[in-house]
Image (cartoon, rainbow, N blue to C red):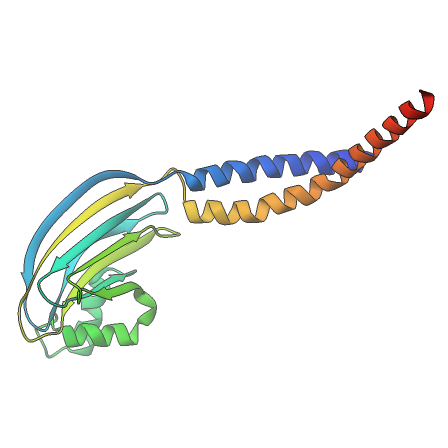
Length: 204
């Protein structure tokens, strides 16, 4: 067997092993590390920060929100300070930075900040968020209606062994490459065994 075939085969075997390990990591389900529930009301034509914090590929959250009327629910990948600063700069003469119209205008000017959005028209929304990189995530409720809306929410912190999405993507790239590298060695082994079997038949 040629030396280069052996070297490629060993490299391919290593890549296959790494790919399998990454695939196994990606299949480990997230574990819940704590939960928090609360409720309140949000006045008409206002928005409110529900919570914010730094999220990592190893730590995200699940959230469910129940409301007695329609609320717009947003997950933004910016801090609440970024939002209030933008409103203050554009509406310096107003002290009501919590106005939902100002918030909607911020979103129109910064659509890239929206990671997810939905409304509670059906009474309840649920969402699970695990970022692909370290991210400052802010969960926002906005009430564009003309009446106060009451809501309740529950949030659970979830942890992962590793970044599942990234591990799965790497595995999908690494394993085919590893298989291709091992093919020459597999073919050589097959040819060698076939030749040996033929020799044994002839000698018999």
